[in-house]
Length: 343
Ligand SMILES: Nc1ncnc2c1ncn2[C@@H]1O[C@H](COP(=O)(O)OP(=O)(O)O)[C@@H](O)[C@H]1O
Ligand SMILES: [Mg+2]
Image (cartoon, rainbow, N blue to C red; front, side, top):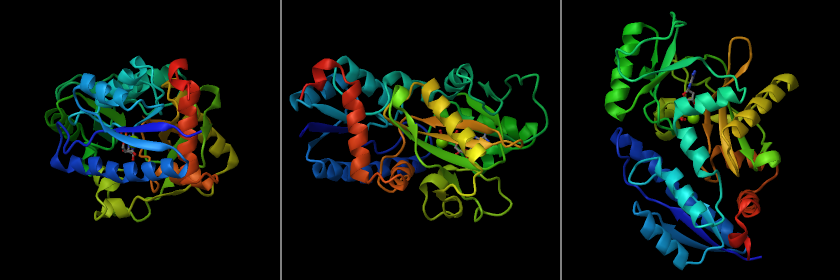
């Protein structure tokens, strides 16, 4: 079966807010789109690229003119605003087009960290304790006490606004960092207990009852700059020349007791379902002092490049990049509205 597959993406030069460096995250998309196109050709499909414009009516018009049988949803933002990815998924659903990845609702919920936390808690997923501050003088919860905390923007992803300085251990530093986050990112700050334990990235594929966990990856912090809090900062994720990047490779998880491994897999799957992810996704967790996995982040739209975590995890299960793309594509077709599913 050969399908006309539209690869829908947007090439924002910079994000609407945040630092200029944030544009680096956007450039990585190009590599991903080229690889995806090659994989689709290899699978016998006909890839067509369409640029998603902020004017969604125009985007819909361009898209429909191509008569796609499937849309590969690769839009990460519109005019630099990450909420665009959910708007695009919503548009595709209204057009009754088969579309890869998570539905609009999950994409939107995951981006609102406080909302995602509430949904995860309701789904029985263990999380670090946390609270939201709208401004630096905001009230602290009754349980607040001395310790290390991480201050992050409440509505960002891709490590935007996460730096070594995000980890604070005094109330003064906490409030100063909240001020910085609120000013730079024009949004509230989410403050979480800083969990010191091992960090795992869990990639998942499939939807509903068919969702499954791929082999686990772990961040290897052994070469991380000495004396610094260990976390995947913006530099660690995107700036290849930085010591933080070199000091935080994601590697296959090793030496995991089977019991611990199944607790991690179970927590990731529960989180994936609690937020209603579909198709593919990644859940980041850390172990607390008791070895209990706590979910830090649920990513419905992780990097699909051949060298990124999801593809590497799939590879370890024997799924080549093309087969991974094929799996995501078939998942989308199975969930597609009847009209679009007709070949
Ligand atoms: N509560 C926490 N305790 C310790 N480290 C954390 C915590 N939350 C996030 N981190 C670190 O910060 C990184 C990025 O945070 P995350 O919430 O995943 O943001 P993003 O959505 O931008 O990826 C994580 O990969 C992890 O290294
Ligand atoms: Mg993350």
